[in-house]
Length: 635
Image 1 (spheres, helix red, strand yellow):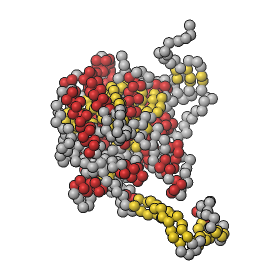
Image 2 (tube, rainbow, N blue to C red):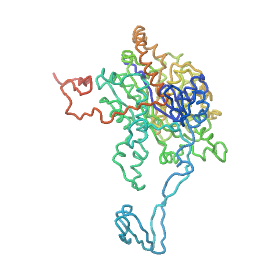
Image 3 (cartoon, one colour):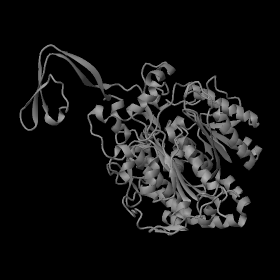
Image 4 (spheres, rainbow, N blue to C red):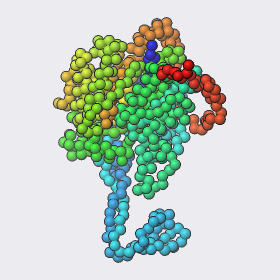
């Protein structure tokens, strides 16, 4: 019998807030929540944004130190929290009044000889033969240039043409919580996301690590386009033209698999399987599939899966804008016949399945901890859901690499078929929902809705609820499906499906006959969710996620009622530890796990035999007893 991959921890951060404790999810269904849950959400976000901080006597203070009770603090900062989370006007001044720093090539016509002074270290090594240089002192040179033409780069500030993005909550900086030394933003977000995941799990990582063969653990984490900010490949690739020096960190830290490398080296100390699969916008699901397959087939028992993308840079945004993929200012104005865009207009930039004009870029880090169901019962791990399958298919022949294709019909069709087999057709028809890729492009609204419509018709589904969380948090590239999965787990916990608040009306070309769209949160008790991704280039993926209730019913069938009852008893301690972590996090006390330079081994310390390798600091040896399914020539 295959092992069932269950989710025993989740963590991360996006424009809606922290993943643990379902904080980010709660921000997207805030109006539907009980007053106490609303207050908890807003207080937690205010602490995260450094607008408030807890006092030693368990009360609160505002940023200036004035004592306030929780209700007064929420009243004071409610609007500020709402305005500075989710999609909004980009807060980097370069995207607004200051303008984006740039250079423009120019050719100057010099009518008379030109003389200027320059610092020695600022003068290029190779000069034109006609230039004359005279030394003034140790630091200053005088340069004479004859009349003629001179090629130069003139600095300028360019007005941003895209000003909306799904940014992390204002004031939150993940690099503050550990000794980050010139780390790209995506890697700082990885450290925070994985730490948040372990904290939320309520499990002691060292104890879990000690009970397993080190090779029973794996990490699959990355992103879709690497680290392209100035601390990574972005700064490296423009170092020559910008006049800045490349650093020794920019090249290695820019790789797309670096989130996994960071977790192995500085968070988990794992020597098990590792890697990252890039599948454009489907990257999270691609990595999730690796973990699910490993656990289902018995290759691993615990897998950390995740992505972290930080693409809100001028260069990446310009790249997507020139493709015609982003909702830029001119397109948003034309869409609503506006002369000027206000902050409220930017907050409505992403409109899945409505009349729309392009996606809204975003940043996010999302991680889940997977475990096989037998180990989860044995350790008393909490079970947030299960992922019995993730399906990936390409589009086949295409006219254009960015054009839609047929692969998504296959992935969703397989996921629904698995759900039918596990839960029954009636459960899928009545108690499942779709987490759409829902990018807010005209092409996506047509093609993805057609996929949903055809699969619904084939399976007798008449009223399939559709969630499109990008309306709140934007499109975080490779982390997008992680945002969707985290939201789905929140829906299982709270019983609400987020609405699509920017959906004034479903667009005429959307295939909506069998689909249910709503602007407001919908109360819905679900057994299953289908997390869908349609990545650039034909990278399609759909993951089937089961609710905790459905998972527990399945566990009873697989292991028996007495085993599940014993697990519930063991789980109480785990839930208490998890609740303590979430309570501290809601008060702004974040603990980033970052163990730089600890327990470093290079090889001579190992004890090696033909059967196993013993590693100092690891309680269990690595077994070398590998399966051979191919037969043997040894008689």
